[in-house]
Image 1 (tube, helix red, strand yellow):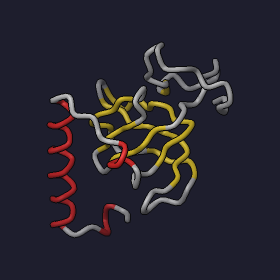
Image 2: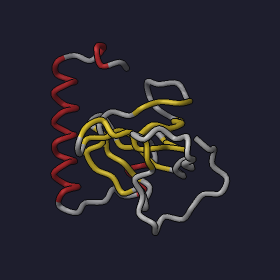
Image 3: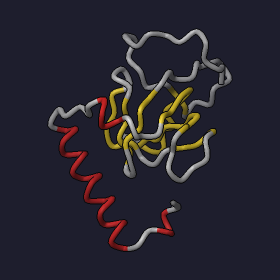
Length: 127
């Protein structure tokens, strides 16, 4: 549902959950697989830097409750572990699949944001 379709109470509840989850993640919390089962799944994703220390993910989503499957941009990321395959944005949890593969023509504000320990995906699209 688009942000404008939420009531004031629903927006406050989403914000409360985001702050709670941010605090949990900051304390070392990792979501359980069962918590991510109903979450939208993002494949072929890249990090889009919005400002210093602020980024979102851009990729191919499936299973989002209010966005059709396909290319999309998440809200601001408040916690993530790409190697473990999860991300928490200001609005919801996502399970993460393989990142997109970078090429020399990839815009400079996009990156995979991954450490070198993440296995490279040889089958992903080239951006």
